[in-house]
Length: 586
Image (tube, rainbow, N blue to C red):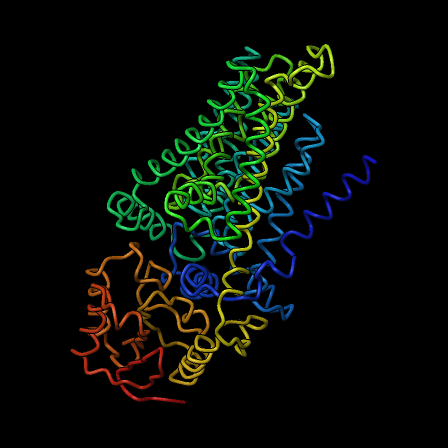
């Protein structure tokens, strides 16, 4: 039975990202994913056009692109496969760690839920995937080093955390997780051992740092990298797109507070049942009846009724489920650390995993939804903690029940509330994981498959596919591969598809981000005019319909440049317009 149970959950974990409804080939992301694909394509040939704070992610992505090319795997689907491979690897790593220090039947279900949660984010190998791979591998070695008293493993732990920082420079904050060494020192009081641990950490960091410097020396240049990193920290203090340091801290704090408030509501219900024991039965069955009625009401449109719509928005919001999970991350760590029956190894595992999950979202403007990337190590200890509390409550209830006709103990109500909350969180998360599927089914527009080699196997709306293929095929046939290009309208993927590197440096071809200002764009464009060989230096310019309709400050800078330098329109369809300094073709 035990073997069958494990086999079932392992098969389910393997199938979750591979289900036909996963949305792997339903659409493309022209902005975020395009931004990453640009950097993967040009990191070895035109590193200046990339965003260097994601330096190692770009190198890894570039290597993957080369491997996919050799194996004739469509690059877009290949990157989705790489994402799934990383998720499987993190599941395996977490499972190995938990069964070593706290084997429990809930570990595999928790990892299956973690895989579902991961599907609520990009199904794509991007910088968050690379950081999760490096940081959680480092966490594995850190916990092994502390629990197994193998200080040499701290070399690998610190080395992987340094690599995570090279994948995304803001990840350097994750080194704070090494505070677990001070917790270990507090328990063991061994100064010599602590010093040995610190030395291994220093050696690991220096080794990875030296490797990173060597890669920079061979690619972008060490000075260029650190200058862009310095600019990034300046940008993080002045960003308009949510990447300010203050905002990134606040949105995570607000999400956690939201989760604590929702848990507090459940706790108040439990306290009422505890205080008025005669209501325990009514509250228990009442919660079940309410859940059934709300689900039935949603089917028949009750969520549109004034008053009830607010309740449905609260209970049907996936972010509220994530907020509750985030709050449980803190609550369960405290409960585990206070539990006298829990082993010190399990306490270290929970403490370190929880701390890393708190640190990882800082550096991202997506707030608590970043939990999708690091849930593999925190959901198991949350599940184990809740399971232990429920088992204890069940034992206490059985001990106090004297007759079969006695009113249920209030602890039964607490267990019921826990089960309902767990089902709610899982249900909303599973529903959210099909966000691409639901959007695809809701969209009634005609679909067709891309014929572009880079997007083989992908289907999308015909009115998006055709104009994009037309403009890509035109640009590929116009001029030479050494030409550079400026794209306006949050369409950086055109650089990747056409093979034309971004002319505007430092933003991965996505000029709409706060990585670059309108003034810097204007300055770089002016440099193309003042360069010696005007025809070769001046870039192609592509606008999409959105850019021309909205005409943001940055778009206006490019439009003025086009007009002042007598660019000619060389291509136009219903969605894109292409401008060049002169008409030249192969």
